Amino acid sequence: MRLSTLLPVFLSSLSLATSSSEPPADYHVTKYSHNCDHGGCAWSFDVKADETSNAPAFSATCRGNSDDPSPCKYKDGKTEYTGKDGTKYQFEAINATVTELDHPWWKVEVLRKFSSPAQGDMPLDRFDQQIATGNVTNDGGDFILKVGPGDATGVAKRML
Image (tube, rainbow, N blue to C red; front, side, top):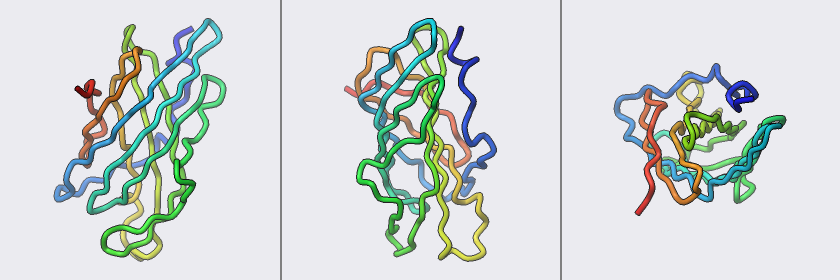
């Protein structure tokens, strides 16, 4: 059975940040690995996002399997970050799924949701981002995905 038929897409209702003034962010996917059999797949990878004007940086470890696509875990254990402007961001969730495409390609999808009560009346959708979607070959290695606001797709490239 294809993994794509096994995995739900988590947080699919999240809207994307659309501010045209926001610079593209770099999302580094490293230590990617997976193990599949007829029962499904398990995966593991780290993801690191650079700070932008609208969101603080973070790094997390993502592990899951076809039966339990668990939330990613922040590497430093923090749930609150402070942006350059002093705004405090409270992270609510980060989830990842890995979907089989045409062998040997896989789609890694990471969704981050965070809020900042200090922003007051700023629309919540400014703080919901689908942060990384791309193809990762099955041989591991380090990859980088470039994702800009309103653009939730990117192709993972092997870092030289």
